[in-house]
Figure (cartoon, rainbow, N blue to C red):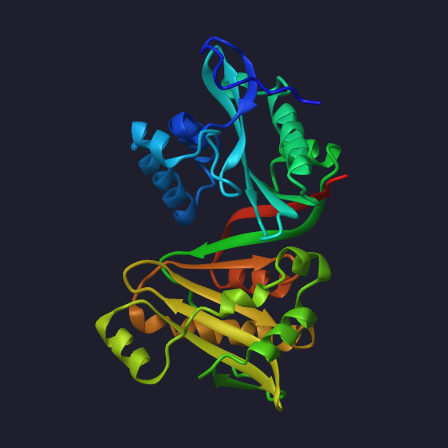
Length: 334
C-alpha cells in the first residue's frame, strides 16, 4: 500500500502526498505546462489558464476549498515533492455520477526527476484511492507515440479502447466538388432525430468506444442553426453550426456537421454507417468543406477515431495533417 505524507509536514520532506488545491495549483500548472507544452490544444491551453487564474486567488482558496484541500469528484489527486518542491502530479476526476468510473489525467513528472519511478508510484496511489472511493474503472489518455508512458500503463494493467486523431488544415482545406452517390440522400437537418441518432451510434461505433462514450451522440446534440438564425449569424460573421443527415429512405445512416467560426477555427465532424463509408466518405467530406469556402482562408480542425480510417485518410488527402494522436486506455479496479 502507498503511504502518503500529511500536508502538515514541513516543506523539506520528499515523497508523495495528497494534492491540496489551496496551495498546489500554481506549481501544478507550471508542471503541466512543462510536461505537455507540445500537445496542448486551444481547449487545453484555456484549461491551463483557468488553473493559473484560480491559483491567483491565493488565501481566498482557504475560504472556498474544504479543509482537506480537495474539490470532491472534480479535483483530487497526488503530488510528489522533493524537499518541498512539487516535481510530480496526478489528477483524479469522477467521470460519472455514480463514481464508478474515474478519469486519470495530468500524469506529469519534471524532466529532472524522470526515470525514478515517480510516475508509477503516483499511478499506484491513484488506483488505491479510486478503489477506496468505490470506483470500478479508471480511464486515461496518453499520446500514442509516448512509448514509455504506454508501456508503464500496460504493465499496470491498462488496455487500449480506441485511438483519437486530431487533425488540422491551414489556411483551409480544398476539395473539388464530387458527385454524391445515388444510394442515399443528403438533407439539411432541421431538427435532430435523437432516437435515430442513437441507433446510428450503436451501428457505427465499436462497443469498446461506446463504453467510454455512451452518449457519443452528444457531440451532435449541440444546438444548430437553421432558417432565419442561420442567415442572421452568417451575415453578421458569428459562429454557427450547420448539419445534414444522410438518409436511405427513412433511415438515418450518417450525420455531417460543420461549425463555422469566421473569427476563430472551423470544425468538421462526420458519423457514417459502415456500409456507406467506402462510397460516401470522400464526397460527403468534400461537400462539408466546400460549405466553408465562402468564409475565406481559415484553419479547420477535425477529431476522428481509429474506427473511421477512411475519413482520416480522406482529410489527409485534402490537406489536413494529424497534429496529435491519443490512445484512450482503461483498467478495471479489483
